[in-house]
Length: 327
Image (cartoon, rainbow, N blue to C red; front, side, top):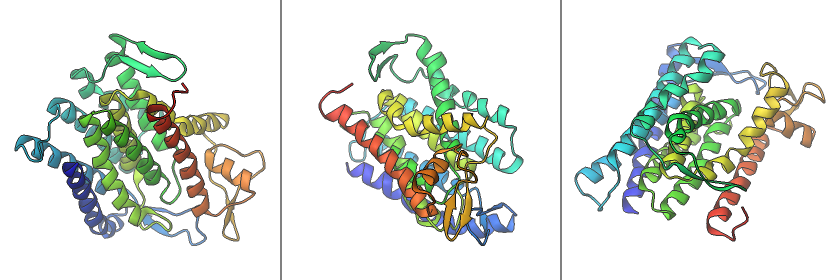
C-alpha cells in the first residue's frame, strides 16, 4: 500500500508541476485551440496530455525502481509492466503526431493496432474472459493475436471520441482508472494496479488545470493514452468484464455518432451561458443528449452529468465483483 501512495504522489507531483511549464511554451509554439463552448472563444494551449504522459512514466518507473531495489517488498512481472508502458508511450506518440500533423481519420482509427504489439509479444493476459451474461469464455490463441489489439484500438479511439468539453476526458479517466485500480488491487493483480494508479495520479493533477474553465486542453496525446491505459490495465488484470461495463457510455457515444455518420458535430449553441442542441433532432453524441434532456445546460453541469453516468457504471463494476452476483 505504501508503494502505491508514492506512485500516486510521484505521478501527481510531476504533472502538477509540468503543466505550468508546458502552457506558455505551447502557446509560444502556436499549439492551441479555441474554447468553442465559451462566449470569448479564448485560445487555450493544447497537447497538455504531454504532462500526463510524463507523470504516468514517472509513476511507473518509480514502481519499477521499488521492485528492483526491493523497497516496500514490491513484486510484479516486469516484462508485463514494461510491455504495458510501451503500449501507452507508442499511443502517446501517435497522439502527438496527430495533434501536430492531423492524421487522416481512417488511418488514425487503425494505428492503435500497432501500438498493441508489445502486449502481443509477451502474450499478456489470460485467454479466458468473464463476459457479462455469458460467463467464462476461453478464446485461446485468438485472445493475444486478435482481442488484445482490438481492445487497445477500440479503447483508445473511444476515449478520443467522447471529448471536447472542459475536464470531461480527464474526469472520465479518473473514474475508470480508480475503479480498475481498486478491482485489480483487491484481486491481487499488481501489474494492472501500477499502470492504472500511475495514470490516476497524473489525471488528478491535470484536472487542476483542465477543469472548468480550462487553462489547457488535453489533446489527442492525452485522450488516446487514457484509452490505452484502461485497456492495458484490464488485460493485465484479466478484468475485461470491468472494462466492458465502464465503456458502456462510450458505446452509446459510438451509436449516436454513427447516426451522423461521424461527420456531425456533437457540441451545441451557447445562449445565456447554456448549451443547446442546434436542432431538436441533432443528437450526435452524449453531450447533445444531455443538452436535449435538460433543455439547455451549462458546460460545467454537462460534464458533471456525464461523469455521474460513468460513476454509475463504476458502481455496477464494483457490485459485479464484490456484491451479489447478478451477471
